[in-house]
Image 1 (cartoon, helix red, strand yellow):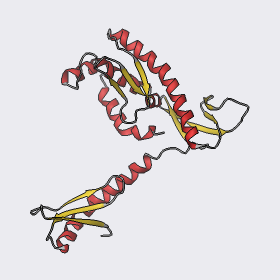
Image 2: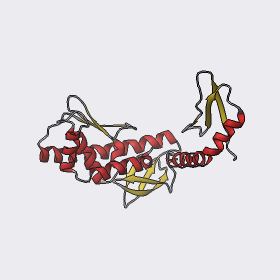
Image 3: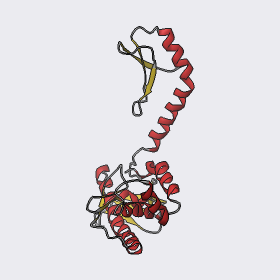
Image 4: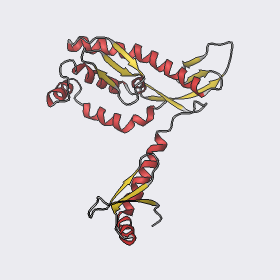
Length: 229
């Protein structure tokens, strides 16, 4: 069977045996009633072995996908949905930071990972302010919706948000995604000016502007791991 697991016995459990697989440590824990025989627990694990192996494999794949970049030459970085190679160099006589030219990212910096990350975040944030601001203006006028301030943040879990006062916030990571994805997120947040919830009426309004919004939602869910810095 070749599955290593820990047993957590409980006097509160009556009959049920269950298992849990940790996302981070990839460890398998079996929770069982206190007096459950080991043979019965082994049989339970044996019956679940295919599901356990499949789940462990999935967790390993997701962990590898979510690996943060090292900011070394040859790595690929996204901009408006396309990936471009990075070339790292250090010239103290030139301006430090990230530059995008001829379909390639250039990073002029000393050998310091935190500094490299800082330069990339600064570059993405600046581009996000320019591009997202323009698209917010476009949709605001087209939909006759008036937002408050528009802010670019370093949010990792949320692509965008709309406050109670209709101020809009967007993660700088959004500039790494394709233009149609950016438009969906902007329209999504603008619609919260009218509907402060995710009711059927809200999604009807989104669908009115972005008929393929479900495709965009699915794309964000399936590809979010590509935009980790």
